[in-house]
Length: 174
Length: 182
Image 1 (tube, rainbow over the protein chains, first blue to last red):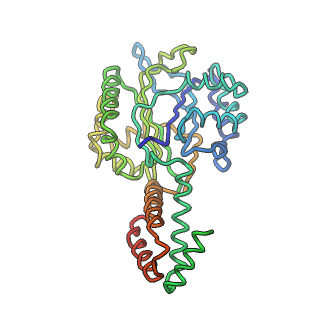
Image 2 (tube, rainbow over the protein chains, first blue to last red):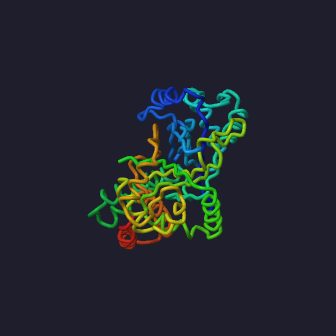
Image 3 (tube, rainbow over the protein chains, first blue to last red):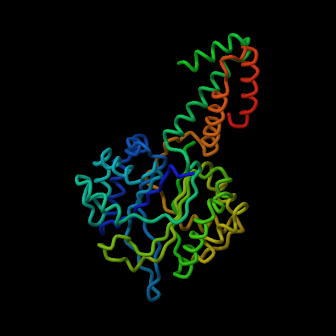
């Protein structure tokens, strides 16, 4: 079965001294209650965060590495098309956060944005996905159908066969 | 309850990075055999592992020598982190050993507390996370997809020439048949 979902993982270096501003931009432009990811069709799961890589010991001393922005998503394949929808749907919120990253070109130019993402994109080596064969539309439709079936079963409980058949025809014709 | 996102960064030596890549190549040719026990845990919405050889990856930016090779683990799961880690330790310790056995400071996959402490020390707070179905668990979604397929099969089977009594009996049978996924 071909995977309907593709993972996108982008790690981009934050310019020195701008990590707190990047975090503040996430808080201001990516509110939990009104996530810009909700505007992008085909998004299963997505996250955005500022993180510090682990530190390597150099000559016995531990130096703090530069902070990075992590943008990751599980989206309907292909990820390139999802990324373009993200760019079109959330240019302001993207620029507010990724604008603190090195060499970020902004969302205005589609090709430059795609090139920058490609340069910072990580290959995913191994994945486990709950329902890899289902698109977001498949999942939404299946959950809706489950509710419809449960509601139909409940409201037709105890009906005689003729009334049940009529209700079935009405439901399926609707 | 919305699913929980977790980001864990683990430093790994070069030899272990080579090994991990090898295991991924093996996993890729086994047609999902390696993923099966992890998927069977049925609370993983998604889990991805990547290796960062160079921080950052963009060659236009100077390499940060303070950051080592790193195994990046991004996951989103249902329930609590305690259940998640406990299931990993109990059900798939061999898979965890294959991924983390050579990671710096990894305590081994067989005891809950050291693994929980290790994850706690290496996880990074997620500033913003979003889920298309925040109220649906992995199991709920899998069941809904299975129900969709079984319902489609039932609907194809429904014959307009059936009597009402026959239809009622078939519907009853269908409901009994899908009890495990409704």
